[in-house]
Length: 142
Image 1: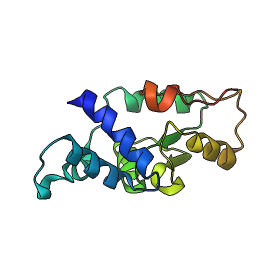
Image 2: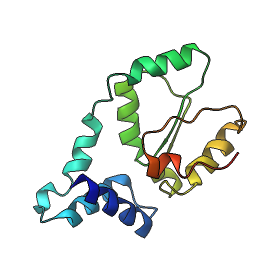
Image 3: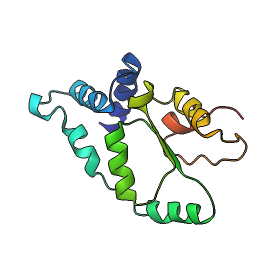
Image 4: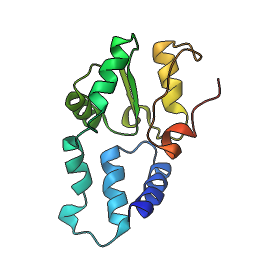
């Protein structure tokens, strides 16, 4: 089912890139099967409680201690990413979220916003990612 989820979610995002991620999750789950009306938002309700992987906090603390500034480019809503950052427990300088820019990765709008807001040197940042489809493939050329 996860394979099918990863096919359907990008379709929903492309159909309406201005939709909140909460809406994307709800529509995607509904398209995967016969879901009772009162459970269609189950993924969206659960997301704020998702725990980060165990190594995340320590790794980000090490990066910060080494002088790196931290930013998140996320396909979520502000309240979702705020809950995630709180659970991680490490400060971030910036979070660019899909619901505020009207675009979902792999479109390049997250990167355009990142560079516009930070003025970051394209040759002096590190991109750490988990999704080949959403994060690695769309990275802009240097």
